[in-house]
Figure 1 (cartoon, one colour):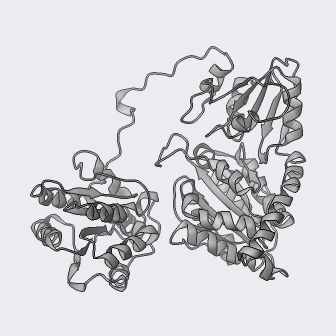
Figure 2 (cartoon, rainbow, N blue to C red):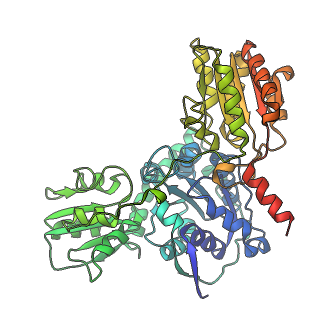
Figure 3 (cartoon, helix red, strand yellow):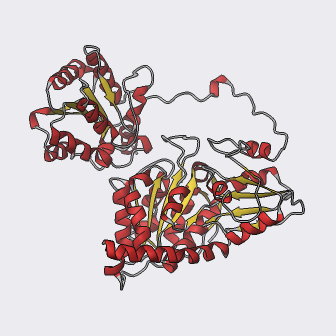
Length: 532
């Protein structure tokens, strides 16, 4: 099949196509976005009629993927780490119901928070759900894990969580493809009424089945080619490494490992290999990207008292990504400092694009709110979050998808006036609609600004589920038509925008303002494309 230079995300996408994928379901979120985009752009995927439309959020994506799996087809569900929180209700319950057609769930974790609110390690959620987890150390492994993972999922009858991190998602390496498989024919589970109806009496049976399957999951892990033991003569230290951290260890030992190494790519922890390392070595060093998941499990490992080094004892930093240097230091190696970064290339804080409509929205809002002493602005996840930075300093919160509206409501319930929410069009359809319904039902005194740039801009300009529908959605939820107002955020309309914002703040009830202007980046790309 030849060797291809793939991003980690692209390797996952191509492997899924080659393995007989019938549908990918996802909501854009860095660093997972390129998986779905690759499938959307793939001529092969189009020929095979593989579903690849964006979902409204991660919960609807996972439920749709489960529906395709129920029909016997192979399906991929992709999200960034915090997206699994949104999908957690479905995620925990499909561990109970199991699946029919092979189902892989990709979680792209973001240690060091390059574009995220936290450093969440979703191996914790995979262990919580008690399902198998795969964690590749390179792009070829990512491809192979996906390619073989669908068959493994069908053989076990459960979904498999594939955990990658930012460096794996966005770095490139050569990947050898494997033969293309046909898609599964549509077929339904023979025991569907028992497995997929989680009434308490049936759910209790399914939970017993999940518990019984743990031994099978462990056997799969202990026989997995992705869990590899590298022996070495010096038993003073044993090293357990997972995922991409294996590369950082390898860079410190270009001529071969000095100590025994257990490389883990499949979970649950392979108990026999761990036991061998523990029994042979005097101390253990755990190298893992993210939380000390393996390290914490080792502390409860039966047998002799273990001396364990890692993130918990300060041998490695508790936060952020690992690096070859941090691993070298943990191994007691002499590590030189980084080169001095010249000011001209030093990382600068991000900023709203010149010509962005959010700029005019914040300028107008800031001027109006100067007239009020205790105003607060609750914002959300999107480009407009940059309104927290100079020169705007226009927002007071950014917690999670959709929290702007509900936090504004709670503050208004506490007596705050004015209480303003700023949310984007894609985030509104993702998680803001239910909060708006709460506001309408309780006649909350809030002013909600849905800053509509007609795209999911922060992750690269993907389609937004609300484009052309936001007014209808708000009206359907129950916002009074006279307090559902559309504005054009341009300088020539600046005074009109201020007037409308002021009028709706003074209204004692739910107001929704929709400043609408297409994202300057997507507009520029459209103009360039039209000139070709």
